Image 1: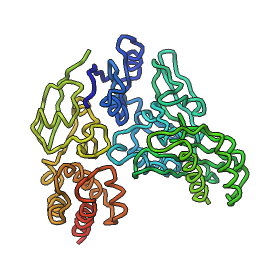
Image 2 (image 1 turned 45 degrees about the vertical axis):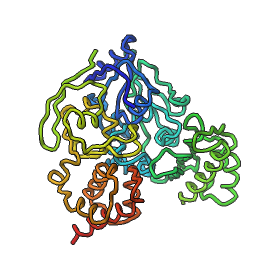
Image 3 (image 1 turned 120 degrees about the vertical axis):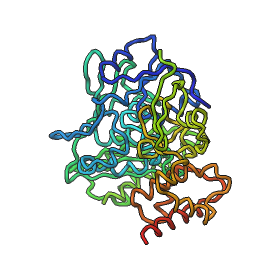
Image 4 (image 1 turned 135 degrees about the horizontal axis):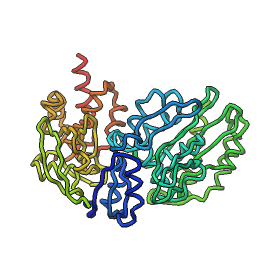
Length: 279
Length: 158
């Protein structure tokens, strides 16, 4: 179908965006890359009064290397992440994951801020942020606040971002040399939304963060799995088995591709393959 | 309240200034306003790849882009691939290998193939398959399309 009727605004500064968001009469919806929003509008699942196109806001562009962190503007597209030497050097997990995010034509348009702000349970980037313990800079007319990824994703298409707030930056810690990363996902077709996937980050002290996507109502850390894997320099058959048993802590949710039981099975498969790919 | 907008867009080297309803997508704009019906609309939610074209030099799904978002942009459609993208050899190989039957996917398939070749990627069947995985073809079974892409790369390498 075609998108329902709406009005369109294209502000050029963050303050203009915030003014539009604060105007309740407009019933505004932010438009970044539009690679999820436009399908939702064509399906008539979304019916905003006004689309606020933020692609002209230069303050939301660019990838910046800071002392201990990498700051990624909300409008940075996947293809820019793919080409960035800063990302290749300091965020290797993102480089590992990107080829699996949709298809090239979608990655040429889709943005990091859009993916994080949508909180699609099957999207990769929310799980990347959880595994890297990143944070999200959110701006409203009341000021700027930092929300840790661990408390940002609330449910299907639900985040800690209020309707009058704009995601302005994604902040990730720089990877250390002794850190180790893992990733695996299973999808019906390369580039489709994953039936289940996992992002793993192991620190130099062998503590570990494990974030699943495509298995529940949002990207989630599996804390029991993390506890069992922490301290292991390599992942033996027994360690992996114990970790797989611990995925029962997740409240698996089925979708049109798979039942909750199938999701748990696939989650265990991707966990094993990701861990085996790490060392 | 902006429901219509004037946009200036360059399509296959020609500049157009048109008034468009803001809810009109880029594919419909090209087809109905400019009469460039080579761009096909399939699923209208970014899955089938039929509407893929070049927007400012990179592939994009024209069903997921509003015409108003293309204001100021350079668009290249299948009508321009032979001249603007120097893809006559690829098009010839699509013919030679029977890489199309009904032709519905061909415009999008060519865009995705051109991008793969332009990026200097190898004539590696697995890599080609991965790259075109976002474009559905219901006729050929894909093998002939992969043939055409790999042949073009090999021919260009001499």
